[in-house]
Image 1 (cartoon, rainbow, N blue to C red):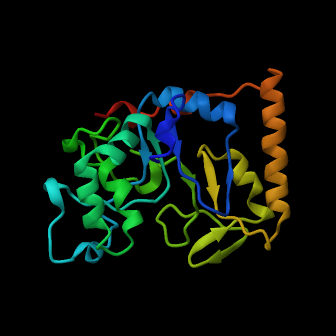
Image 2: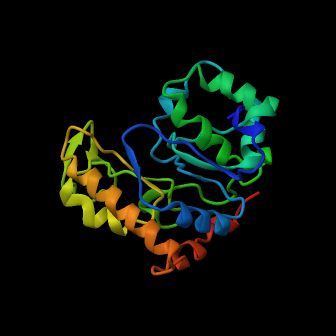
Length: 227
């Protein structure tokens, strides 16, 4: 992140991990993030959190309330500047690194503690159950144990769906930015088909033969309830 701040022209940071693939073209992502207009995207929950992971014998600094979420996030530039340069973020990073699975706490907590005043942090009900009040769109992941789990036509590995060919119709309809997970050695055709889908969408949008409908994103209420 620190290195990225030396470049002046970007407005959003999206962290990617291995075994993922885009569900949106670059054109579509730009359109969506213009609608977000400074709002961050990150998962958050207190209800589903295993709070034992935070019991380390000392409280979080600066009256911060821990939140469980995903390592996958979409963050505006000012939020990233805060993470890199602000001593509060540094103090919290020191604390969270003493806990279990810190990567599922760090981003989610800072996004959902509006008392810190971080630009783009969320002020409302943070729960992302069922994706109704506050959908999490940075990543589509189909967990076997999730209350909003969908049929997995691939296979489960450690309770997460590894997408297969049978999941392609679902993936083509999802509103999220990226999908997780794929395995190169499992039904590789699913990745090849997704690659072809994104290629043709990119081509058709460039030649204005395909219209990208942004109404779903414009109607997201939570992106306007921010610091």
